[in-house]
Every structure is written in C-alpha cells, then in structure tokens.
Image (cartoon, rainbow, N blue to C red; front, side, top):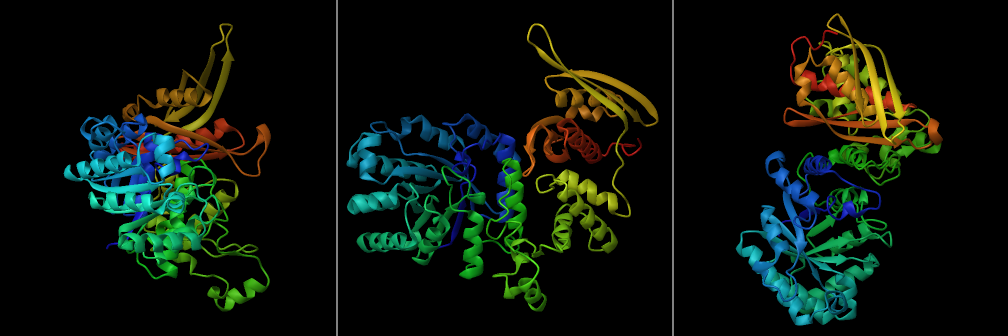
Length: 532
C-alpha cells in the first residue's frame, strides 16, 4: 500500500502547554505543512471546538492544498446512541473533509473505567461509526488510543479492536502509544505479535508516538521497519507533555536513512523553512539543537572539525545539510546562507540568481539583522521588501516619511486605560498630523497612522490587523529586553506578516506596522504609493 505521512500539528500538537493557534494561524500552518508535502493534515475537532469548526469552514474556500488531504478528527459514537443521532459525528460530516480520523478505545481498562461501557458496546461503536462514515464517502482512519498498553494488558481485546475497525472499512488502524512509555524493541514486539494473532497485513497499520521516553521518533522508525506504512507526527514535536514524534525527523530519517521517498520531489529541502515558520506562528523560539532543522544541527567549532570539513564536509556531517534546507556553519567564521536566501527569494517570485551583487548585499543585511534579533522565517512580507530594495528595479519606497510619533497612555479616574497616539508624517509632499485613540499603544499608533494616510490611500480601509505577537528574545532580561514583534495583516483576500525588533516594544511594532502597510499598498498596486 502507499506510504502515508500524516501530520497532526493542528490538533494533537496544539495541546502543547502555552500554545494557542488562532484560525488565521491554523490556515497558515496548514499551508506550510502542504509545502512540506505531507499527505494528510489533521485540522482539529469540528463540532467539539468552535475554533476548529471555523477553521474547516474557512479552509473550504481559503486553502488550496497541492499535496495534502485535510482530515477532521473526532470520536466514535457515544455508547447507547445511534450513530445517525450523534451530534459530534454530524460535526465530522459537516466539516466536509475527504477523510476523517476517529479515536477509539483500544485498552479494555479504559473502555470499562473511562467510557463506562462494555467491551462489546465499544466494538459496536467502532463498527457503526466507521461503516457509517465510509458509506457517506469518507476515508476513515482509526486511532487506537492506549493501544500498546492495552495490548500488553489484554492482547485479545486490543486485537479485536483493530480487526473490527479494518473490517468496518477503516483505511488504516493506527497504533497509538498514548502514554508515550514504549521503547523501540517493545514497539516491534507488539506489532509482530498483533500481526501474527490477527493476520492483519502490517501495511494496514499506522504509528502515533508520544515522546515521554524521548523515543517517539525511534519508536516510529521501529514501527516502519516492522512493516507499518502510515506514520503520524507533529511539526517540531509539539504536543502534550514532552510532545509527539517530530514529523521533520521522521520523514528525514525515512527518506535519507532508509531510502524511502515518502515526500514529493523537492519538498524535503523545505524542512528548515517550514519548521522555523511554524515556530514563529506558534510564538515558540525555534530549538537551535533540533535534529536536521536546528540552527546548530550542522554547526562545527573551529579546530579539528573545521580542518576536516575543508577536505570533505561529509566527514563530519551525517547528511548534506542542503538536502533539508539547512546550512553547515563554522561557528568562528559563520557561513552566509546565500543558497537559502536565493531559494526563498525565488519562492517569492524574485530572481537573485541573476544579480549576484544584490544576493551578497541581501545575505549580508539578513545576517546583520538576525544578529540583532530579527527573524524573517514567518515574515515573508518584510523579507520581500528587503530583497526588492536591493534589486535593480528597487522595492517601493515607504508610502510616507516619518517626522515623529508620540504615544500617551492615560489611566483615568474611572479606571479606564486609554492610549492616544499622534503621528507627524509627510505623504506625497504634504505634511500630515493625525491623532487617534486605541485600546493600547500599538492599536492607537496603528489607528493614527491610518487616519493620516486615509485620504491619500483609501485602500487602507480594506486592511485589518489580524494578529499581533510579541516575544522577549532569548538572552534578554527584564523591562529593557529586546523584543520581536510579528504583525499579521489581512486584506484583499490574502494575509501577510511583517516583523519589527527593538528594545522598545512600541518602536518594534512601528517597524512591523510600516512594513505591513507598505507591502499591502504595493500589492494593491496603488498609483504613486512609492512617492512619500
């Protein structure tokens, strides 16, 4: 059977402590995962989580996936309730996804103590729900919750769960190490025993591993070596407790170590970009020491390593870094990363290959900015403006020039806190002073800037601030820390993200806001937008 790479970042990965995705975030992450070339993207639990219901509604018109199939997640029907009458099953159908994933109890102890039903009723719940959804034209995957622990407690019952799901029409039965307590040899033993007991072909099975023993990726690879042909994971290993199996490490190991072409051609080298962009959207600092995609994954200190690398880089690199979109770095004399910048620019429709001088300038500028805390991984709009500023035809100039801005925060007697901003700018030769109030200093600044530009650029009324994130950069402390701001703007049927960095959060926000409006007006092709 065809090998399946199944991503659950937007559902299981979202259970990580401190991680919250907006609907806009979820749509952006789905696009990135599709760039990676995964076969399936589990989007969430429609009907049970309002945000997920909204995600699936918007996905129908806003997501154009090239590689992936969108999957809605839910549970088997409730005990004692007809499947046609179960509202959460109806929610799965209403999501209108081609595929559905069902979680089913595979441990008899959980059936009796958590579901508080009988072993026979649990099997009927699985059979009824799978067959019903298949009859409605859905591809169905069944996740056997606590499958490994259940098999070790009562192998006969867990085997019956797997047989029931597949007999009812499930495409794959996924073995879930829900507690994350397994080791690779134990995974192999359970799979071999299950196959021997039931006669189920191992390629009808899947693997979903939690990382409580730090073996999630290893357990997944062990399952594949035992014949499993469906693997689940999350971007950067996000998930509850220590997390899930890292989808990036899984696919890189399968493709580069086992020679299994599990991703479409040209997708593996997107790994670093996708990993870092998702971490920015999640507002979680990228793990610099993450396998394959971390900034330190192919970093070497000067000395013995460096001298050997000059002869042959593969003497100290287990794979060529470029195959996953990474760069080898010598920590004393860091490499510039020209190839990554050229690749990213090409993706944005900009040709730096034909302009080597511009490529060198952009590379140097990006290196300088990133040393100061800037990151363009999730801020394509700011990066595009930077690249275009170095091309012969140049980027658009700012739609205005700044004289000054001022922000006042007032705590009033009635307890209300109001921010007021005043901006002094020059627009197309005219000096403009504008003032506005907002619910915070950044909101007030955004409103004042729009007021000042509205007469010259009425297109701004179609732009709105979709999301705003602030991060204190690693190594910075206290109220004087360096802050990075990401601003996501929506307008004209698309979203774009810009970045700003400064010790002052308002100034960092200003940089991101100016980039956002400059990019949006340029994309709207406003005549004269370049003339400040």
